[in-house]
Image (cartoon, rainbow, N blue to C red):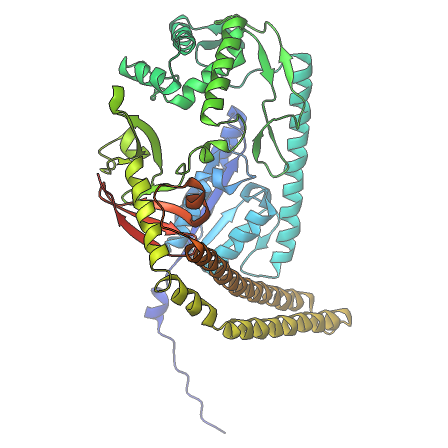
Amino acid sequence: MRKVTRIDGNNALQAFKPKVRVAAYCRVSTDSDEQMANLEAQKDHYESYIKANPDWEFAGIYYDEGISGTKKENRTGLLRLLADCENKKIDFIITKSVSRFARNTTDCIEMVRKLTDLGVFIYFEKENINTRRMEGELVLTILSSLAENESLSIAENSKWSIRRRFQNGTYKISYPPYGYDYVDGKLFINKEQAEIVKRIFSEALAGKGTQKIADGLNSDKIPTKRGSYWTATTIRSILSNEKYTGDVLLQKTYTDENFKRHYNHGEKDQYMIKDHHEAIISHEEYEAAQEILKQRGKEKGVIKGSSKYQNRYPFSGKIKCAECGSSFKRRIHGSGNHKYIAWCCTKHIKDASACSMKFVREDAIHQAFVVMMNKLIFGHKFILRPLLQSLKKTNCSDNLAKIQELEAKIKENTERVQVIMGLMARGYLEPALFNTQKNELLKEAAILKEQKEAIKRAIDGSQTILVEVEKLLKFATKAEKQMDAFDSEIFEDFTREIIVFSQEEISFKMKCGLNLRERLVK
């Protein structure tokens, strides 16, 4: 008989086995007293439950109160939980149910997979699902879909209720505008704020611009309703608000099936309630203010409800600050006959200590662009033509070969799925093992498809640059003479954006991929 010697385990090592760091996530969708009491009960329950397990270490309670579960971006508690998981502070999460964790299928599956990749798993108490066993992902997908459908149903019921209140005039305005207060569910004039509203309308009708009006209020240290600073946008919203006439227009915005809010430009019915409350401004003053806003919009090429603002000047939205990354805003400097157009960093305008970048003159940018384009026209044979030839020589065969290789792997993956499905149908494979293998194959297929799409995007990007270089070379070759003045159409055709490094130097980022620095002449 063979001699067998037992080698005892190291009890000391076992004693130092690290505990599993466990956290809990709770959420209630309203901030009513009943719901808040429920939240406190959940928090107490999970803290006791986790601390009672000797193999677990309490890693905290994360929660969101009075917040819908349809979008994870709105839930600070959940985002903090995910961040701590990424920072390796948590090993395991407990939550009440799928619907408490997420009512959006895409978000739910995305978060579960992300956490699984980090080695963090979730236990859903109500459904008895532990994501450590990945055969539960199929069940989780179904349940989170049901949760999302339930959320849509609740949203539709809520919308129907709101529309009924719109129709019978019983809808309560969610937040009283500046100049009004809520008293017993009704709007009443706040006399102090009403004087400011009258001042805003009076100054607008006298010809003052919205930014000038805002500057005056800030200079007089008059706070907004929320105690912040006045802006041109705030002034425009007051001048455009029909509630100051005593009327109320309901359903100015609406939420689509993806829970995204949009301005209502006729897609949904609107409801006007006349003489809903006491007026601050007459209808005649209000209509006159609308005409002024409309006229100023026409002068600046701005159409209400459109994205025209970004395109009314060639440089709008295209000048960026190298120091802070903010966009530049067009302004008029100087006085009398010495006025000139300048572009200023928006962050520097609001707070000079936050960004030190100073303004640049528009005429200096024009001159720098002309100089840069003339260099390309003069030296196109030495700059653009070699660049084009280099791009054409770039061999895409390697990328195409990689795509073919990935397609073969995707086909093989599909065949393997079909094989295990056949084995399952014949009873040769246990359901749990089938789900495990199937989910692994689906995960592998998703990775392969994403790799394939990434290569295709790289090829498409190279082709786009090639076309832009050809376009610029064609322009430079056919130019009969060098440019002698700034041309906005040429700028739009070839330039993506401008980066400002200082009052002396900027860079033109061309659509063809070139970044060309130029000096600014004062």
